[in-house]
Amino acid sequence: MSSTNVPQSYIKTGSKIFLESFSCTRRDLDTQKIYTYLRENNYTIVNDPSKADYIIIMTCGITKELANISLESIEKFKKFNAEIIVAGCLPETHDRELRKIFTGKILSTKNLNTIDKFLPSVTKKFSEIPDANTRWDSQNNQTLKGVFRRIHVHMELMRKIDWFLLNKAMKVVGKNIVHVAPFNRLLPQPGQYYISISRGCIYNCTYCVIKKGVGPLHSKPLEQCIEELMCGLRQGYHSFFLEADDSGPYGIDIGSSLPQLLRKIMDIQGKFTVKLSHTHPEWLVKYKAEFMEIFKQKKVNNILAPIQSGSDRILQLMARPYPIKEVVSALQAYKNTDSELSIGVDLIVGFPSETEEDFQDTLRLFDKIHFDYGILIPFSNNEGTKASSIEPKIPKQVVDQRMKTALRYLRKQNYVAWRFRNSSLIFYAR
Image (cartoon, rainbow, N blue to C red; front, side, top):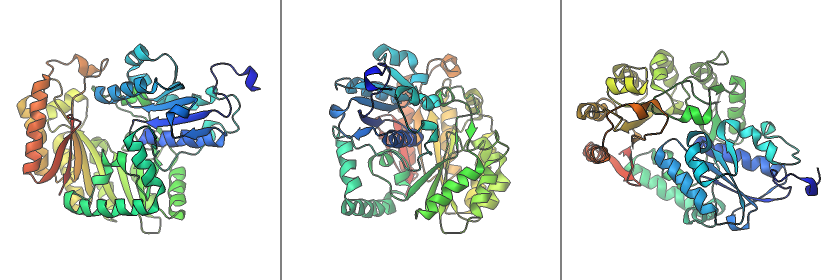
């Protein structure tokens, strides 16, 4: 198709494109794949949005706060003389709010392959591009963070200085500091190889919009996961992150399972470690016996358990089908199996009808399990979820007070903890 006959809906061949991501690791990997796709099809990627013909923004909509950050970013990018394409979860999770400020092209997470319809004459379709194994590094010339990352990506000496200083800091504040925001958003992380083992979710948690944004579970074939890991080993990587929206149910749609994948990985010769991303606690309980045998080999060194609450009553309202006692028992067993295993946690504060006793049940988790890092998030009332109709809602001032109480409690328990953007509470074990 000649450029003179290209419909207006198409991105013209040879256009300059700027990419930006305001999202999670999984969407950063999607952004990196889009980058490769555009480069393979002879489009020019620029670091300055003022020089771009098109701007692709990878957005997040998991909470109202993060959705607002994405919406504000879209407004900021409108000042540039470029057509904007809004990608990521926001078009699905917060469509009404998005359409109030934007009526252009969208590229939702669960329909990324439709990017082909925007390009007039691709030589490689998006589905033909391998999944990315390294995260997108934003090097936006217009922001301090982008300039910082641009310098620190391209200067070998600066990278060495960064990681020397950060390694020193980690000895003081916790060995997992680089794995949780905001640090994993600022410094490029050398040596980390990501394998997207699945996409999507099988659950219908009453507060969550991830399934709405990403879609149902689609597991990557076990053999393909193994081949990606082998490829990483051949490239000299020794740290692997099994990434998923929920790694727990991996394989149930293709006749496999997470323990089966891990056992195959454990059979691979070589010195390397494996980290598990968000693993629904139901599967940490279900696979307890298998995981204990796997963890004995000490190659899995990090798991993240989104427990969300220490109260069984609140977990029932969240539609999280696991007794908290069984989760605690499983995590304690894993720690006993490998004392060096790092366990992270996600917790929500202020879920509708949460009493002071429910909140204290959440804090008591720290008396039972030595979490190495994690995040406490104020409840986000996403419209259209079942949780949005649960009453009573907890007043903001009460939620804020509970977050302050949690901050004091964690510091008293010898955690390094602080409020991030006056909202989420991030913490690390010393």
